[in-house]
Image (spheres, rainbow, N blue to C red):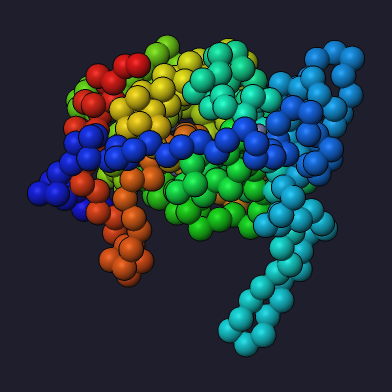
Length: 329
Ligand SMILES: [Zn+2]
Ligand SMILES: [Zn+2]
Ligand SMILES: [Zn+2]
């Protein structure tokens, strides 16, 4: 990472000159309450008693992606031809419609509703991981056009893949190596040092803390960690998810206030499917520590980044943390 302080920027520099106008109410939205028949059938939902699937009365609703990147199937065989290797695109691609109201972003919801969204993440990951050939389940959210959202209605997505993705492998192998060197989970150690230094700490409560990472890839990047060591998001209880919901609401609200509702991505990283983890990375429960990464989309990935894998970040994470500590509604 290159922290380019001579290009140093303040939050104002990232605010749009005139905030993007939201599309009018006349645009048809398949995710709005009442339009359930316009989506693929419901996979899961939290709904009022007495209401039926694919009808109104839901609070959080999960459907298959209409244009899935991967589709369910049997464990896919690998094929080879010379140096070329491939496998069929077997996996899962679901959309989590976070709430029935088109204009309520995740950060606008009450914390108990955000907790419900997190519970749905947990239940879907657990259910998908029962199929052992779905080696990794990635939960993510694209908010705003520039962050990749094609529909304005607040939603998150789940993609399960038949192999462990490259980025996840990098984190797993990296944390394993550092565990061997330090005899301690690198995430736990980082949290301890960040808390002592207090330079990049955005906030902490009884169970979670939020930091701007030392090597932040983008301005105002944040990471949320459980304070108690835990490799799997799926093993968190409702109390922990309530606490996470409060933290998430706080930081997303601050991000929105500070940067005028910027586009962002967030991702959930946890250890791969337990069946795969036990086989491929015995001991992973000691060194992997689940977390969420929040990446505002404020800079462009261009030639230098593609060529090198470096990221140029014009906002030092220490300044970002200071702004985010101060930002209130
Ligand atoms: Zn809608
Ligand atoms: Zn840890
Ligand atoms: Zn990560």
